Image 1: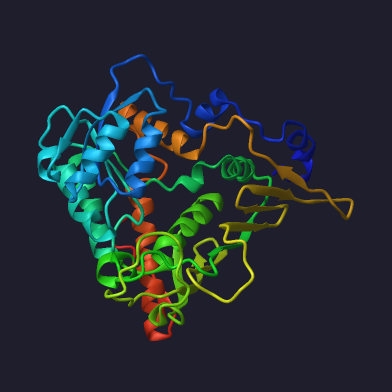
Image 2: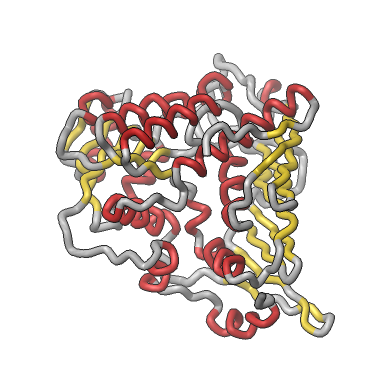
Length: 390
């Protein structure tokens, strides 16, 4: 096994300045997009995250935004005008009935993820489904069954996997440079960041949870990916709601509804045990009296080397002759961005029929862990994971 120390000189020279061609080969298994008719995409949900996807798609010539819809039709009409989208449908049913649409992006509130994803798959559409994949494990199981029956591509857009720093670390892990990764520490701590107090964000029945399902799902997904996708086997966790119920810790995302309700957590912590003996610790918050830069972070602890990512900074860590030998990872100035790479991967999978890196089973895995953390918090006990779907 080649140690990280042996690779530091090379890593230090190139600083991981990936160009577009290199990233396509690394991220997409060498699949090259060929000249063809653009894949026609329908956008379901015209809110903030839906608009992000529209902005990204305009940068990807392999796709075309064919239609848009939203439960609030004037918003869909405004987005269509802004992005020069040909058709506005007054309902999801009518958009999915359009035979010219190849795939859809589902960017709606969490409670509608499973119903709309299943409907889209049954309509013969490929699906990019916003995180979390489902509001709970049972809904996630239904999506898995529908995806397998439909034989279409379903991808969860966990954009943190597509960051340059994440991919640089993943390369080293795959080469064995970190040795055995025995522990990972991940989190995303916000001091004052409760979104949309009183709206669907803060209602368990509509969102499925607070920062754990909102931020924690990203960190779980990225950590397991960087660790080499070991299988989670048990969870011990706890959740707390110290600020939200008192209408404190309010952030700038979303418009509060002070007549609404708050019945989700504002902090969650967990320890996940994996089948290779490794462990993963997780801490996430929307509100907490802690000094924080509010950046997502992952630290990998390996027998031969370590890696650290925090926001847009990364580092590989090793020792040579009992001295620290670390390399800073940098993002190229002309980097096209993680969401563009992610979208190209989705389109590539549609073309090739391959499973996306963030497949339906990665979404199921995340939901399995999330449900177990909530269950552990309620019972005070460790929860062993039941893999009833493989």
